[in-house]
Amino acid sequence: THKPPVKNHTYSNRGMSLEEELNETNQYYLANNMACVHKKPTPLQIVKVDYPQRSAAVIREAYFKQPATTDYNGVYKGKYIDFEAKETQNKTSFPLQNFHPHQIHHMEQVLGHGGIAFVIIRFAQQDEVYLLEAEHVIAYWNKQMAGERKSIPKREIEEKGHRIETGYHPRIRYLDILDTLYFS
Amino acid sequence: THKPPVKNHTYSNRGMSLEEELNETNQYYLANNMACVHKKPTPLQIVKVDYPQRSAAVIREAYFKQPATTDYNGVYKGKYIDFEAKETQNKTSFPLQNFHPHQIHHMEQVLGHGGIAFVIIRFAQQDEVYLLEAEHVIAYWNKQMAGERKSIPKREIEEKGHRIETGYHPRIRYLDILDTLYFS
Ligand SMILES: [Mg+2]
Ligand SMILES: [Mg+2]
Image (tube, rainbow over all chains, first blue to last red; front, side):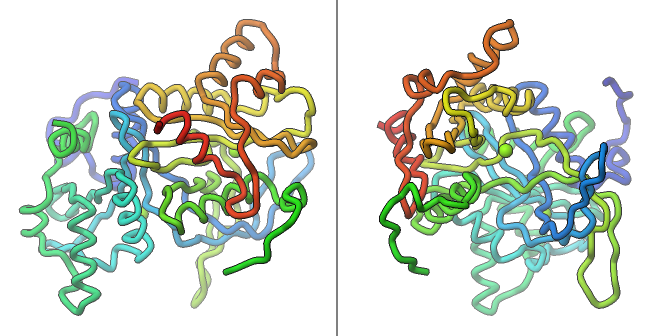
């Protein structure tokens, strides 16, 4: 469905989470035959299900589980792509505690099998979105494990990462960055 | 952890669903650095969550949603792979109603973007497992839509598909088939 364009793109995501914007972006990419990328459902431990007569099963007790992987994956130009999206209210750095250890481990495995792995980070206060390749994230993580700083300075994300153009449709044009990095 | 070998492999899956066997297989492939493939969590529509003090959030009302994609995906030798697993009690054919239309559509999209898509079908009565490339599944689906038969004859799956060796560890060696089809 057609929606009116929004003039000021810093307004366009008011109230939309990064996840919602990425879901819209992926729908756009899918509908325009550019890539096939989906968010994985939230993993839940289901404990109790009711099966009422003549209506749908109802889950009555379930718990959130730690995800074993990142949130998004799919195929772009024949390659496997895999990423995690994270938003921070911090202005000057991105806290590494936003990652679960198994997400880092998963990104290492994806790279090991020849896939493309990265994170998409939004600094919400400035409304700036960056793509940072998993190689860098893993390096910062390992340094943290060795006792170094527990966050990635924003200025290093600006240097090593890639600012993603944000707009209205699609909202977060991350394929443009992948084209430059992996397909040119 | 080491488990004793099972002599008769037709006994080894007693009580295990195809999904459980594939999860074990994927764990084996992951642990042995052969591929990185995961089952996607079951998609749920969460309606009500309780946040009790000092304990984990409890989902009190949720419903099963239709999955938008297939169940499994990941990366193998740099390529995107994607598949759906289905089991049937039928002896002579596989009913196409086991697929949701959007799963077929998803497989078409994966192929369109250069990924590898297929289904793994188990005929439970004979304990035979086949890999059938998505191209064939889509062709049968389209023929059904055009008024032809609503199932794939087992003998055609035997001809066009590929019998997967089943064993104890890993249980369903589907990478062997992919090697022959796509990497040789
Ligand atoms: Mg996440
Ligand atoms: Mg399924």
